[in-house]
Structures are given as C-alpha cells and as structure tokens.
Image (cartoon, rainbow, N blue to C red; front, side, top):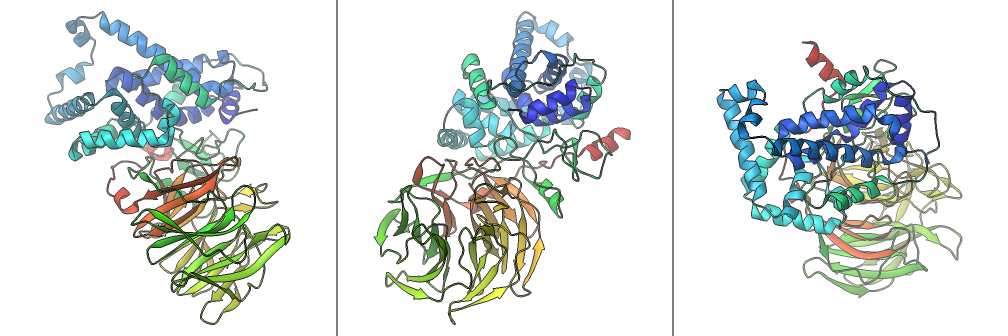
Length: 616
C-alpha cells in the first residue's frame, strides 16, 4: 500500500527535489522539539534539525520502506544528537565557548540578556518537574502536540497524558505556564526554514530508485513506539504533521498558501497529503469558497480537558441526546444487537442516571430536538420495517410520557435536526437509496410540517447546530451507500428567515457520523469517522462570526455515532462505537475554561510572505 510519504519520496527520487519541502513542513516541528529535548539548546537544535533533513534527503535512496520515513527520520536525529553530545562531553568550557558564534557571545544588548534570562528561567522550571511531567509539557507547548498524539508517541493513554499535563501545571505557577508558551513561540524555527532546505537540496544529486510497491513494514505509530522503547523515557518523541500540500511548484496554477509550501487549490497532485486527524491535525479541506479562512486554525490544541463522568447505563451508538431543564436525555440507538427504545436521564449536578419511560418506536439513525420543554424524536430506521421512518413522537420529561405527533413529509434516516425560534428543521439524510438535500420545518404549536429550500449539498450522517438564529450543516457523507460514499468537509449556513443557504469555510478534517453541539457562540464537531472510515477522537470548533475553525482537546476514546449535549454551559460527549465496541462513556468539557489560554504567534507563515521578506 502506497503511503502519502511514499508518494512524495518517489517524486523526489524521480528528480523533483521541491517535493521534499512537503516532508520538511510535515515533520520539522516534531524533529525540532525532539532534538531540543535532548540538547537543551535552541540554537543547537535548529542547526541539528537542518542537518537531519539534509542527511535524510542525501540518503533517501537507501530507505527501503518508504512508509517508515518518520521512524527513519527520528533515528537520524537521535544519532546526530548522540554524536554532538559525545563531542561536547570531551570539551572543556573554554573550548566550548570558542566554538560559539561570536555574535552570541559579544551581544551586549539588554534584549538579548532578557531573552537569555527568560529561557534560563523556563529551563529551571522544567528541570524542577519529574521527567514524565516535563516530557508532556515539552511535547504539548513546544512540539504542538495534543494529548492523543503525545499518547501515541509515548505508548500510553490520552487520559494519562491529560492527567500528567494537569499535574505539571499544578506544580508550576500560572505565569510560568504563560512564560513557557511565550519562550517556545519566540524560539520557533526561523522563517524560511523549509525554503532554505529545499534550496540546499537542489544542489544534492541523489541516486534514483525505480518505482516500487510498498511492503507492509513498520507503520508510523509502530516506528515512534519502537524509538521510544529503544531510547528510553528521557527522550521526547513528537511528530507534528504539517499542512495540506499539493504541487510543489509555485505558479503552476492558482494556489492557496499555507505553511511554507504552495497548496494547489485547483488540481490535487499525486503527492498531496490528505488532511485528517491521523495524518494532519492542522489540515485543511477542499479549495472551495471561503476555504482560505481555515488557515486561521490554531495549530495547538487548547488546554481544556475532558473529565470522565458516570457511565450511561446502556452502551449504545447512533442514538440522540437532548437537554431539558439542566438534564440530558439519551434516547434510542443501537447496542450492537438490536434497535433500542431505551430512555435514560442524566443529571450533571448529581452525576447520576435514571431510567425513564421507553420511546414507543424503537429506532436508530434518527434525530431530535427539544422545544419548550418537550423532546421530539423524528424519523430514523427499523429493520422490521425495512424502510425509512417518518414517525414523530413527543416526550414530556415532567410527565415522563410519550405522545404521537404528525409525521414528517418524507421518511428518512441519517439526517439531523436543529431548532430556531421554536421551530424544528430536519435537514438532509438518506431516503429510498440515495442521499437527499431535503429540508422540512416543523411547528410544534401547529403540529405541521412545511417544505423549505433544499440544502446545497445532498448528504447524510452530518451534524447541524444553531448559532445566533442560523443553522450550520457540517460534514457528513455523500454519493453511494451510507458508510461507502465520499466523506465531506462541507459547511453550509441556513438562514430560516430568508430560507437561504450560503457556503462557509470547510471543516479541516473530513468526517461523518460525528456529533455536534453549540456552546459559547461556537459549533463543536466531535469524533466521527474519517475519510478512510476509521473512528477518530478529533474535536474542532467553528466560529461563525469569523468563519474560522480551531482545534480543541480531543475526547479520550476515538468513536463515531456518539451524541453530545450542552447542560449548564458544559459539553457532554456520550456513548458511541469504534466498530467493535459499544461505549457507555460520558465525558464533560468546559468550553469557557478552554478559552482562557491563548498564546501569540500561531498563524502559519506563508511561502509568499517568506519570499517577500527574503527579497528585501
């Protein structure tokens, strides 16, 4: 199976050195953090990082398994660090000083002194922590890795990583945490790093290798874990995936710029790196209208945490939850054996679940909303009917009673519903063998359904959320059977007052069977299946006001078919499945607390900006 790295490597070996810039952008921050963790010196780390990529390109023909490029790259970095440390250990202090850049030693400026003192303070603070805590802080703040990526690198669980991060922060003063972020931002790789590497390797002739079919060898994740086992826990092992990349040649077509390499927004070349959680946590979607706004994705996950709460009594997936009077109601779904009618009430204040009256119609792939203290379960699927349902049933939590209501105009499954001004809007879904774009409006007061303007993109397995009177339809699946079509990044905004749709900035990572909710004026897209139909733990927040996306802290377990609700200002991610197991897990997230930390200087430097700066 040919990996994205393998495709890029073949381009390099076929005489296109510019393609190597994609790999540099993809791995440079991780290698830089890895090297600094060993050397403890930013300037040495920058030099060694450059040497690592030059050596990797020079020896590229010797790499037998292209899919293990990352593993091989970290081995080169480790070897160079070990060599440099051996040399330094044999020097006396004077020899070491004489080898330093005279500009550094002679720098008399107060700014340089303050910078040095600040870096020393940060290093002292890090040295005061236990090794395990220091590792996760380094990888998070300097390597730009989230808890799941750190867990993959260190061979432990995301929950354990979040606990270490929390305890590490507890041992440091708040101002020191801010200082760490500031120092690391100021010590990032210099602007033009990728450009200089690409220019340097153009002078290097490498031995070409004929195209080959990649064997199944060490995977990236396996390679990182093997490095960790070989080097011991004193090493940090980050890998940070860079931006979505297309043609390496600027000017070939109209381009969208990100990182330090151009992104072909019109045609996708055979070396493009597809954005998803497993490959690119900062990836972008398709180059369509408003797509450029996704450049404002925060490259670091925030410091918000997901807290484990009491499990839901019934493990299930593809169900829905709704909040009424501060309590959350989990309704219907699938437990791996049959469709459910089960209703369970969760009280976040007491962290307890209570069984309630069953829904009259057991079903899956349905949707629902709460209006005026009542919950409406709409549409869905039952195997015994072998047809999409148009059934609507109303639940009164106070009376614990269900009532039959007027059916939808069109039965469907895998759709989503949202509320604006007391009316429910059922959007998209799957009906009679095809995905549909149908939108229907339900008035609970009149108990009537009315057809509205179709959504531009026919799809199902999506999410819809309401912010400031407008509905945002996000992600999903299109073309083909559910689970076998094209997984989408599309975001479209619906204005019920105008009955009009508008295209907005794409979601960075294509997902279906995800869950979503609105909190603090933002839409949270949580979990789901990626383009390869693997369950993910990704959490991304969309801000309608700025039409931008930001990466948030991942949920602890990758899963799809989960449901989320907001109660008392907090988000609750509940249940779901990974294809083999059905979960009853409940996690709580405080979106307001996650907004409190904001380090500066996170926007990527574009290739165009860098070239302009260099020309001056």
